[in-house]
Length: 477
Ligand SMILES: [Zn+2]
Image 1 (cartoon, rainbow, N blue to C red):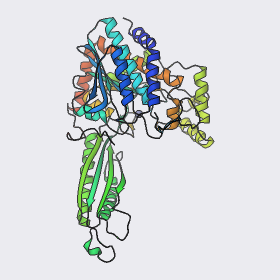
Image 2 (cartoon, rainbow, N blue to C red; image 1 turned 90 degrees about the horizontal axis):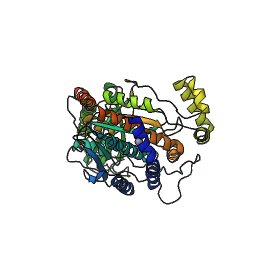
Image 3 (cartoon, rainbow, N blue to C red; image 1 turned 180 degrees about the vertical axis):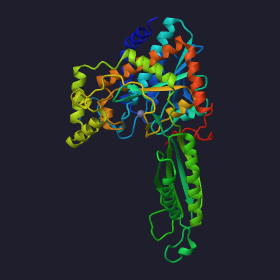
Image 4 (cartoon, protein in one colour; image 1 turned 45 degrees about the horizontal axis):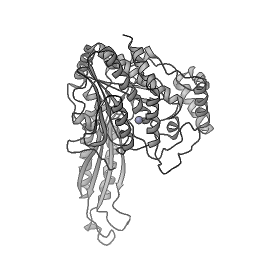
């Protein structure tokens, strides 16, 4: 069987459909847990494509599960399709220009492409199952609200991914390669202090200041920093300072903390110490402290077996085929979408990172090869709910160059790339590579067993969800 030909033909045959799903998602630009039009579109397309579709998964109306095939291996693709606030921008436009209308939001992280790329992968894997007649199941999970929620964390906790043998996802990027970098585990916690109000001048002795407690907690945590692992990140924001009157002793306060570290267990250890500090602050000020675990994410564990299969597929198919028109547009983005100072600082950063190659990239600013597979290349100092998925299923993750090199995520420039030929080509390429990797597992189901054994070795078969069972999706926030 020519796996590559089958998956590439299937993507080519459905090219217009996949691009249309991406472009429509771009126009809907719906933020987390409000992706109603987008989820409906996926439901319609997936049913038409012959998938068995279940909507409203795990208490999330915009989550879905689309299944085709039977038996093992069960191969999952993880789709995301939420937009970001305030990042509306006309597609293909190299100057800041929001889309007309009353929706200020936009796809500044390229999730319109992310979702449609996994759709391409699911359709092409289904084509391979049909053509080969082999046993196997392909599942496309619709995972809403990646940006502000953590649907995959809840899905991992609640057993939605049970029975999956191997999982794949990808992310729009400015380079082509399999991502083996871990992400930071993270918890988001609200600390609340309750004090006693009083006249700050006439009867301060009667008051107990909740604002003092919040401030002392911050001081304590800032001293704690030196004595935790140096790649941990602890940040906070005051959410309630107890009012605006200096002459009233503040009776209530709230500080919102993020505690991040390379591994989930480290986050739990640091969090316990942060809670101790909060208790200390309450004791010092005679106030009462309570805390609420709001959200959490686990670190990403790249599965080597799956990553290697994915790299093999990427090397076989190659990077997106960009042409002169794509390079011309990329040059416009590179030089015209930023101030001259920004262009110079971007160039300096690229010289440092790419050496000699940087000069070539300044002329042709699209990554047009596939990066080799490398492990232990450090940590990505961000967090993602793909981490939780990777604790319960062997997972691999790739990026394709949907944007001009040096385009940061969560910017209007990233949004602007979302409907270009550059982005479409790179999205379709991601779908083809993911599907080709999936066919390897269908051909050799024992590979999935190896991948699962590796995961078990890594985690000891244990996944402790950072979000307690009683907390559901925060649909209205
Ligand atoms: Zn993203």
